[in-house]
Length: 508
Image 1 (spheres, rainbow, N blue to C red):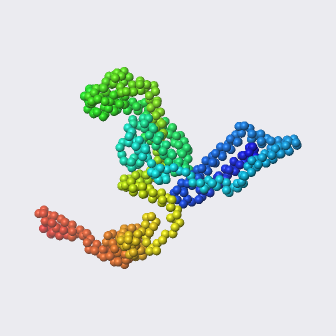
Image 2 (image 1 turned 90 degrees about the vertical axis):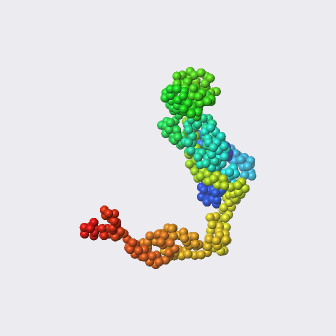
């Protein structure tokens, strides 16, 4: 049986169908909690890996490099001699009996219980204590690498978590280094490993392949985010010519640039950047009349002379390739950060929260999270004991009785304007006057919801108060003939009516 290629092909197709049914059955099951959901994803991932392995085996059979499949098919299709029919039949029968004799303890596996162990196993997933079973990222090693590098800066860990993907803040001159590339590779490696543990059904290979195809076109057009000037020879010349010596006629004028500016200009050209401000200015001023290649080797920094001599031939090309590799890694890293956006935000909030906790409090909280994750499904099934009918808190459990009495939650306040809706406790009652339900009721009555109507819950009282307010507004209405003021040539003030009467009489 094992020697039959057609039987092996049939068995492989049958395995594929069973694995597909298992994956569908597992995905149709509702996981009890986050841990069970993660296990479910890993079990489906293992089933998919088995499907891929079985499919590869089938492809090898159909390719038939050794010709065994073709030979077996031909044996079935050709019309052999009468004696050959019985000879081949008894040879096949002998193989079947020999196979059963060797595997006499083998049990029959039905379609329902094959690969059932895949749905019962608990995948082994390794998480550090900081990651809290996939809830947070553990970026401490990358954080230490960043703050101790030339391109990094000192900051809090919580600030780093929120900004580590914002690579556009780092200048191109600091990016084009092997150290920065290794740092990016470490970030990409960690995020990929984390994503494969927390979201095993994500097809990272497909995501990266699509990014690489789009990247080639963007790089050729200079449209890669953060690398619009993609590091060609022109850009390197511009960076080196940041201090244009054509605008300076003496060493004294260069001294005015300051020590840091001179140091950057010298370092960009591979020259020694030490010494006083005067010495740095003199060393840089030498390039005004002498080309960099013809400068005395004593002015160059250690190890930079060879790179200057090789710059016209290989320097720019190797530097462009390095920048291209770095830009691609940055693009992949940002894409993974977009997928893990919620985890990054959660990690930042957790890091900020830890700044206010002691070590003992952090350990207690970590243990509480682990226990809560394990018992989450059990809590959902348990019936909550609440004989006093206390309100539920944020954790889904009744609040303490002393808190219930403190806030007066046993007092009921009804509002007729809100449709006789009940509010429990003085605080909820006072707050409801600004909420949507009360505002909608006042709008239906045609009354503006102002401070004058606070503490009024009866419709009749609200209407009566609104009528009184309208009548008072009529008395206090602006009357220009009595309240508009006029002044005569002597400085006397009159209202408009008096001023008009006196003017008609010719008195003013």
